[in-house]
Image (cartoon, rainbow, N blue to C red; front, side, top):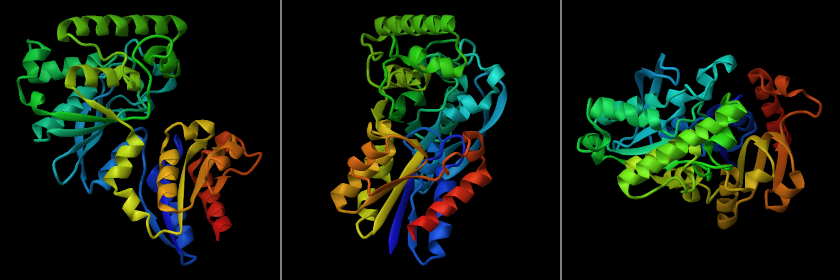
Length: 352
């Protein structure tokens, strides 16, 4: 028997690598061959999943977080020189305590620093993971950093005349929100980053004004492009200022891992995420894995920390849909690492 493990991180609990390693160890003890393919749709765990998929290495850097405090971070470099950037390394929500969250102050300046470190290293092709940020500045901080680093005292046009202008950016994200409005970055995502209703209105106004001025300068407007609202508007800044192309993070990673080829001789694919429900079928990674499994004739099972809408998921074609969390277990208990590992082992035993 051969199982393919293609499971996203259990957000706030276990990384993709941790989930798959725990399952693989339990399955291998029973003589089942397993192939672990760390997964990410561009959010949590993107850096490690994409770097591993490309056979790259991690490079340590010293940059600023969203509160302009010095922080250790990393980016990936693939053998062909492609840089893998997870913006949450510079402005992740996890970098600040809950009582420190303030998207009016939080900046993406560190993202610009992170890009510059890779550019100075010689990278010209970038894969950018958008997700998990604690910012909502529409990428203004990132643009300011790039000007400071590549054209200090001048402007962005001058910065683009340097090696920055030689770079090409691919964005990995499953977010389709526009930059502004009721379905935009501020209204949809800023409250979870600490924004009050008044802040949300101010953030939306700031983003709208930034987009209007940028459109006048460039002669085009990317603020209504799908994904412009990703990562607090970083998606917009990358597309408007750096000509970035937005792609489904899940599709991009599956292509990079040559997923369809790897699953051809498998008996079962196990995919999953921390919380699965009907939204899982809206282009999230497990849905993309299911699509590939159907095309190859390999059954796909779904495992999650928590499952809702089980019948909907089964009717979509998953061969099984299981939650690892025992009924009645409180969430605060279930997300403890040692408890999650134990629950994963019990799940693995149920497959044998």
